[in-house]
Length: 452
Image 1 (cartoon, rainbow, N blue to C red):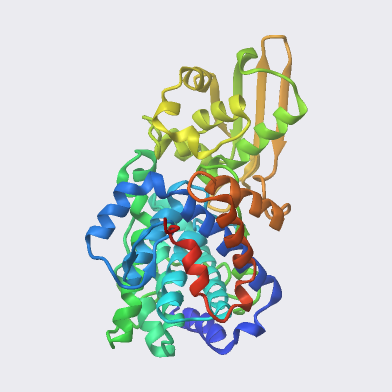
Image 2: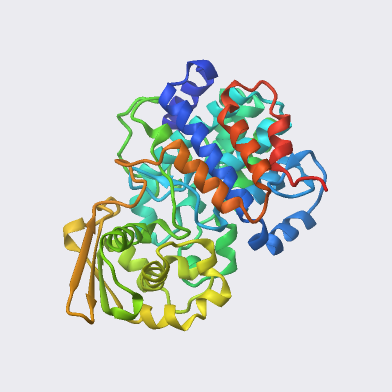
């Protein structure tokens, strides 16, 4: 199985940036734009975590999004990984696996490209490599990740970050393999309970994997080795990465480098189908929250299971709760980061409405890790009406991806409180032309905090 990684790595080592598939390169540009927006939007809510990482050591020349200081590559990627995932607005996958490629790949790619003076094309190639690897590892591991109750992005972030940073460092095939296997041999477990319990440690999950991946590529560069059979040897990780999906698909094909779902709701992807159904219902029907007698949410097994684990609401756990997120969406028509501030979590109108929401598993969506991620919402009103909406997938799903204009609007909306509109627009313009840039220094200047 280590040969599986080597085949993917060989493809990207041998493919110059200007020979990438157009669809993959364009999606990498869109993912970069979206992830940078997520980073810049989260600075205020991550202050304590960022201060902790900064206390481990400063200086080093790598940008932390929205901040006025720099860090060495690994801590900078750690910080940006934290920011990317903090608001649960970061991208996910369109092939049903338990990974979030953006927060695992792009922080490492940015730090490594900055410290090694990479071109925009080299950055885009590394992102394509990272997304393909992330999705492929997810296909192999998702069934066991779900079975063991783990948080997929935390488990898979390290090898993806190691591979991406190693490629940008210029590691040869052997050292790149060692970076990959070192990172996997030291990868964290990341139980999903930190999310449903609302523990602070969940905030570090993906970012810690990114940090570990960066350290692994640095270790490999110095000649350190990892297990040669990390995915297929005795006493290895072969029982975790035991799936067969994707094994027969050659590297660079199958769409794994651009199998992405972008998120418009600031919550776990498990609630997005329900939020989409509610949004459609509110557009079609006229009713107020005060008219609602009860709400039925019928959705896929995994969404029901993890929502049911939430006992106490806080800014982390509430993002998995179908009753709470549905109550906010039915009231406001949007699910923004503001819904998860402490004052919002205490709002009696949200809490009262959430008690009227009943969640049940829909057998029509199938079972297992790769079940269909649809939802049916039924709302009973006090005027006698029973209104209903069914969706097969969440907004911006694989059949209805956002346009560039949609992603630009999201970027400007979520960053509005943290950076000036003129600066945000300048950054958007530069992110749109990244593949053509030979020098990325101006990009990193715009990503950093504006000098006063």
